[in-house]
Image (tube, rainbow, N blue to C red):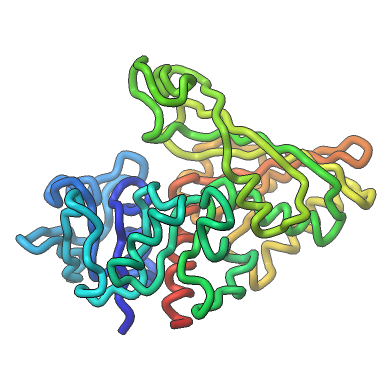
Length: 333
């Protein structure tokens, strides 16, 4: 049986494990982090965004016991664990520090056979493939793809509507803006940060930020001519991306929405993309497992420019896709 490890047990690592256990997708043999596993177990059991986990949580000297599954814990503050000695086949890196090849390569150097990066790689040279569920996951080649990136939450939110619009109406060029919940890269109070805009309190400001989604999308579609930016806002989770595109073919708002409705029933995008027919706010999509939820009443157009809005729970939706990609990779080995 193939063995999986989670490296980094923060926001995404913990949600990945909840989903993996609940859906029987990912049951790791090892979790590695730099913090003590007693505190990590408590954070796993009770989550501010998603409440109490419905399973059983216990610890022992070796690690966690979750729903009866014994999972070894390794303190990785001294360095990357020796995955070969642990028999690990796939490391899911949720540390946020494997976006460059040397960060991901460290796992291979320590004996892991494959690395799945839960973030957009800086460039195509920093990974072997960018693979997204519902978009191009079937392109996974175990002989060629040792380091796989699954992009970001925003990448996964934008990819489905881009795919549908490309296939049905064509895309000349476009721009997106994502209104994104604050994250741990920001500051709780005003203090100097590496990115100057992040120096102001995350829960009290709208903070412009960059987005790596455009580059990651161009790794999938090299001819895609879009760019974008992000605004971090004081919500705990739940984000929305507005995608403005100039299409090649003329289309109506209803034709656009009908294409989205139809796409949600296809085998590739079922469970990945959904639509909302009524008017909602961000609370509606918290803990929604889809990675792209099209708000149909917000679809608009003028001339050949269309505007589409996609909601996404930036933690839960993305973690569902991450678990599915990991499960698929393991199934192909």
